[in-house]
Amino acid sequence: MKEEIQNHVRNLFAEGKIKGFLGLKQEGTDVGPHLFTKAEELDELSLGDRENPAEARYPLDKILTHLASEHPNETFAILVRGCDERALQLLFTVSMLDPDHVIPVGFACPAELVEKHQCWKPFPDALVAGEPAQPVVGGEDPVGSQMDLLGKLQQWFDTFDRCVKCFGCRNICPVCYCHECTLEEAALIPRGDLPPANPNFLMTRAMHMVGRSLCVYCGLCEEVCPADIPLKSLYKLVAKIVGQEGTTPEGLAAKAAHSSQLAASSGK
Image (cartoon, rainbow, N blue to C red; front, side, top):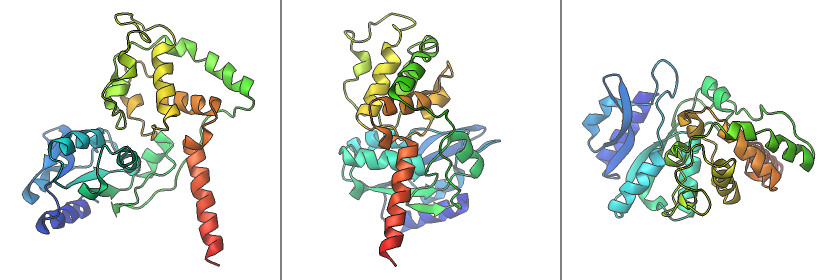
């Protein structure tokens, strides 16, 4: 799979289509983001795998926004999984990136990674390498009425107390693009309070992510959280409470299935 991606990007360089390729580079035992500017460098490309798939993941989309702001007239390719591509599409929508200057280079996630992250679309449309695995959706207890939802939210308060307000979830998020962050507003979230007042910090972030339909459910926030707070589950719950079920993985999967059925029917 890596060789297919390397050859694809080499062709992009050879054809003069890109200034650079934003991906991951292996240096010794370390893997980190890297801007490849020459085809010869691609021998050191990594897909983030060590002993297990995707042990090294980074918000390359967010890094690309900084690159693009410094080089607005240049075109860059970027390594993407399915969730990365969803983040790209959102950043295109809010004009943080110009789709005419971005070339996604996609690869599919293996089944074990799909199961781990409960991913509803584990491959990008711009697929270059890998065999698409079957999506996995669900994994949560069924919740019925609005009172059930609010009752379940109440159960989260003990979990909120584990938060140390490290800003890791905000900093790693590929679609946190605001120049002025609500989480740094002293009027909403007093500074210097550890742990932060329950549940201000996490609920403010959850409402921001859900209310603006930002979350792409990549799971990076959960991976960096030192308190092991299941943030994706929180965002899904809040989405259901405020009537935004359509933005959850389950809702998006249902929409995609409905669109496929319509397309199949119209083709008959």
